[in-house]
Length: 203
Ligand code: GAR
Image 1 (cartoon, rainbow, N blue to C red):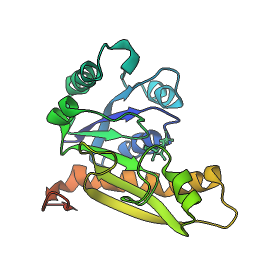
Image 2 (image 1 turned 90 degrees about the vertical axis):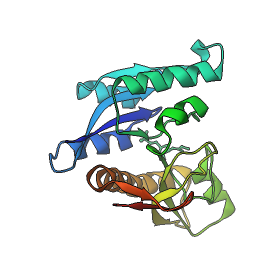
Image 3 (image 1 turned 45 degrees about the vertical axis):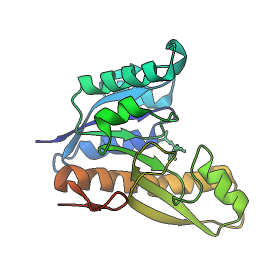
């Protein structure tokens, strides 16, 4: 049976689109059953609608506390009985309640080689630092900021003339492939936590 994916988004949704496209192949092993967002009017929600995928939106400002938002987001996801929840450009940190339900099966993608350059501006920070190689990381989310165990990484060369937009665009090409490959392997082969930091794809 296909693994059920709920994908959380805030932006353009090219990573979401890559997952939707991959799921069209019945051998891929997964299906996007719902898309959740923290804001209206994003390209990602339009992409979900075009593919008739159910969506939900939970805005932090509609709740009196961050913990209540966190609980509502967890409840929304839970309704779709996901095997995996994927944060694909979702620009919010979840809290204890969400992780209490989905910890260990909530993954995120980040446009830098963690643990370097965590946070909201991974591409800009790498460029400003002057590194010659950066990349992308798919990891399991824990309570820290981009600090959970790494599932997969890919390197991307920084070119002399890169600005944030050109570098991010090239990272995103690698990132989409990495995310699709990693989610597919998790769906088909499972994964094994060997220690608090080390996770292996497959049993
Ligand atoms: C991706 O590059 C993702 O890694 C990044 O946002 C982009 C979303 O693109 N996420 C973060 O920076 C999270 N800290 P998309 O909306 O086209 O998939």
